[in-house]
Image (tube, rainbow, N blue to C red):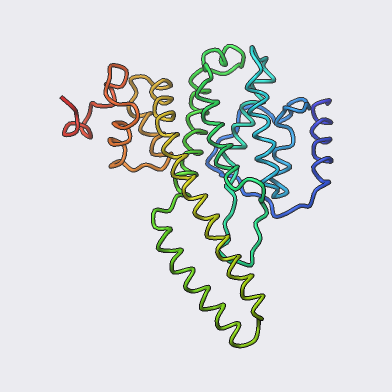
Length: 289
């Protein structure tokens, strides 16, 4: 009852800000096998869902960042604290990235940190990678295999969302976009629908939007590259000797069958603990001597 009242308190507090369209969570991210009624504290996951329901993504990621930082300092966590971590990881994995509207007139609802969503999702993966699933299983009444499966799924979905947001052809698209907007600007000015000052403002907004796109695209590529090694090594640790499981989660992260061999080569490499990944029909022609 106290936990329920605490979450209601979180909800009432979060209503003090302007609400937007609800954020759509990824339905392919499995929820933890526990009810979301962690006791209220400054560092609990209580209220994250409320922020998502109200479309307050920037506040959601700010709170998540704080939770990861503060909860990471706690040693020897009890059952409730470990459950809290699982719900925090779930919401971060299931939450959408900041939306990008190509229209120069559209204002972003997130302003302070243009790559906060990427940073928080990346931090969540690194946090999970430091966890001893055997130790967590001793605290929770579920198996180590179940915890490993949840962590593997969360990290895969996080990597997938960041990887898919990178556009290698963005430069060409922006070139066309800039030309189209400049032509639109010219016609609006010619038809006296905007004056010179308004035309200049539109040009600045177009430039700013393209700069944000560049910043986020570069960040997506960098975060993907930095997470690949952590992700593959985590899978090798969770599923030793089980190449099928490792490949299953790599594919969930957005990699095709053809991409998997190169991914394994550049991240884990061939050594005794990864030898099982170099066996089978898909690797015969790629195995190193």
